[in-house]
Image (cartoon, rainbow, N blue to C red):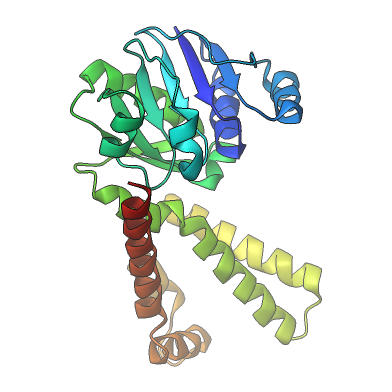
Length: 264
């Protein structure tokens, strides 16, 4: 059995890194057009980088990791021979992928996010009707090398998981930067403001992980009525910060749906 990557970009490298760290016992092959990228992947992860995609068999897993707009051309001459396909290309639904792949329905769509680069990613997975229980186990096992996995009940949820966890790290970085800028406005130098923002977010996440309390309860535990935190939260409520965040997620979901329709 081999795991074959079509495309060797950052997300492919993140999955490969996780597989290597877990000592996943299988041959890993990467088909990548950029020769410098191939050299990096060979040196960093000791993978094979042949000029052409190897002959596949039913025991192999093909991971589609090229840009969505390049997928049709990249898949043009692929002969799956029954191989399981994992696609991490956003916006390409099972119907479109199946058409690109000669009608195969042994396809699992995956939406990972960038923390996969350090093994702390979140991947939403959706299995087409041609995927067996054993296939699901293999797909989950591979993606858990990059972090946690969540199976989706229907394909439409791929747009939602894209908007929540796929794009989610950018929302967090946006808020971290906003807190850093607020600290600078209060007189801290840039580096100290950065450290304060980073440590505050990191500490809050770890506290939530170690607590059985909900996010709302944890927030209340920091907030005394009429106190400093209460004053800040009142401003956030007046400007409907939570509602705006929800609107942003909805906009991301809608855009994912539009891209899917365009690419399909």
